Image 1 (cartoon, rainbow, N blue to C red):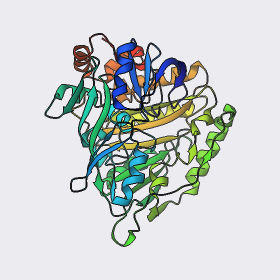
Image 2: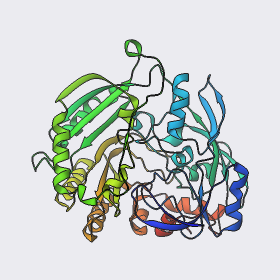
Image 3: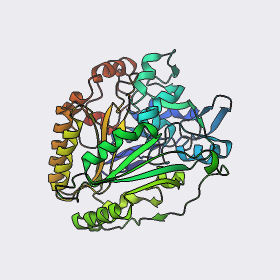
Length: 445
């Protein structure tokens, strides 16, 4: 059956054959019977990475079994359809959490590895792939291959951040970290502009395991360009510690008929002004539940519907620290002057990149992520101009968020792309593994 599919940004939409296996043994079916295939977890990548209009899309959410756990090392073995949320629910009472927690708990571990996801602790602990011990990969020829840093090393490296184009990840081993309490002790700082935000980051970020800033891309005026609220914290320990239990949070749901005009330049400006002013200039030691700290938007189910049927682009890029401040100023000025503006935007600092993975996104620098409503051709022009700034400064966009970057731009951003393409060509010469993103970016050699 051919089914319409899209990413979380609701654009673009592809029509794909769909296969939903119940057991690992059923994964070979689409590779044997369709022209090409791509695995899809919960579809939380934003653009066209998780569906395949020219073949089959393999839905992996039912392949979500825990297989083994060693509490002495924290090593968890599980199927790739297990989600971050399922790990938190089961392992918080046992005193463990994932080493990297992204901005939503609705992410499968297979998707986390394929996108080499990052969290608020990247400046301390790096990206997801660094904490994966090994994994099993169903390759294009139907062979199940064990990959680690000692075995099938090329495939291991090409799969981490490889957007699912080297094979279907079937199961993996991940090293969880011990905790005393799932909550976070948070310090809040309000920054009047971008320079003050960057100053605060560099002054004290090393004292915090988790660090992120909400940043205003619309309001603030010229003097307040990039005004921000920094939220940085450490795991609760000692006197703050409580009973280990998953956090339960009531949520609301956005209806499928939400009108797109709800988010316009006026409403975005009003929301940003309110959000900035509701936070104190400074607050210390605020005890926060992990759900509200790590997953603020998960409490609004289907929040992507707020942008209407046209959807939105989430633009995320990283700029190296050298000249990164000037690049952020240029990007913020473009976003502030653009038609609809950017509704939700966050700024983080990255630590060392993942040298093992040629397509891994993080690198040392500042990363800005902004949600931009898809309203007219001017938005595409805006994002292309942002690409030019990123390329000029030696940065890159995040493929897991991308829906419109050109092949030439991606080649300029990812210096090790050719080496990755060589590995892809060698292990999948017939391009049996493909996605709409792969075809758009010419990642099928």
